[in-house]
Length: 404
Image (cartoon, rainbow, N blue to C red; front, side, top):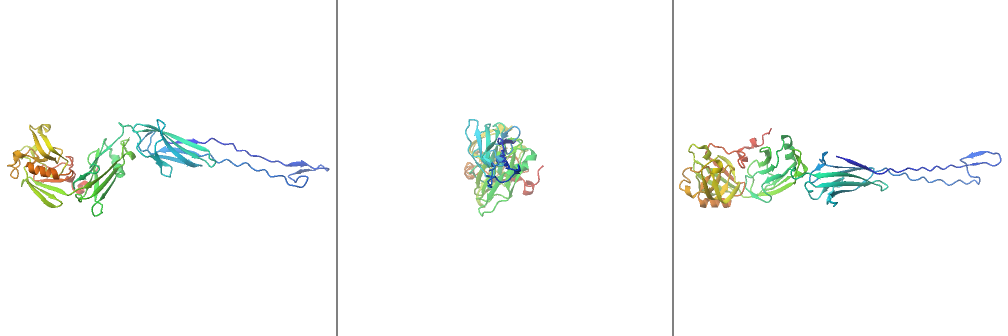
């Protein structure tokens, strides 16, 4: 969307000088000759020619015919026949919006504009004679209801486990044709303790979310920064409301392997066995709803006290437990179960959780950080990719396989 302003035209004046006279006796007519006293007449000084008028055009990146723009628009001024003087963005109340130019005629506000706000951009220039020219552009920032946002895991500043993926969830579904471009606009930088980058890749997990997972578990101590420039992209025609910039650190390696056949969970910290915990997994009495899923689970959240309410999934029980560490959205936890201590390390009697003593549950709860690994083996019920953070149920070839 472009507007052009033209400076007023100027009148060019030309002065013509004519010299001539009548000769004396003889009646001869002399033209362009010297005066009668033999001296040349004075030369006329021409009036300077006025400089061409400046031409100014002003546009904003990505603005359509409706004038709706991102909260962080990039204004671009182009001048011919003159020099750009200024680009000013004015709010509806007449106040100037702070911002800065890049020296190439572009200009951006210092802070995101108010969602739904109306603004006027004006670019001014002068020609060689100092005569001004200008162009203006009316802008409306995308409204709150129309804007799309990105939610992210991990949180900024969080310390996470070695299995934690980067998760970006959009508040509207992303059309397939836009997914590759959206991922390309994001930046993710990693720095392992030895200074090397960590290999990994993005994968879409549904139409509204994309995950980045390392090829192998993160090296402990890795630092990660993720930038999602939502105000520079559109999702299904909608501008992003705000950019996201998240930095996090990978903590110590906590990897638990829970064997439902031996009824033991071995917890390793930075590769060393820290504790072997007797467990009782989901009972295997013919009801598949109680079978614990095999596969890599990740710690999602933890609660010092938690109501295990089977009624939410059609089961007839509700039990208050202590030191509950969630490892699947479907309701699998590592938690204290004093009623099943006699079965822990012996047989599987739970509704699908990993039952442990209160003392062991408290120890595991205190150790756990989001993204820690709990790898369950021994059952024929598989962990699902979308059951919380099931990213590691896919091997690397599956994770990086082309998506439709």
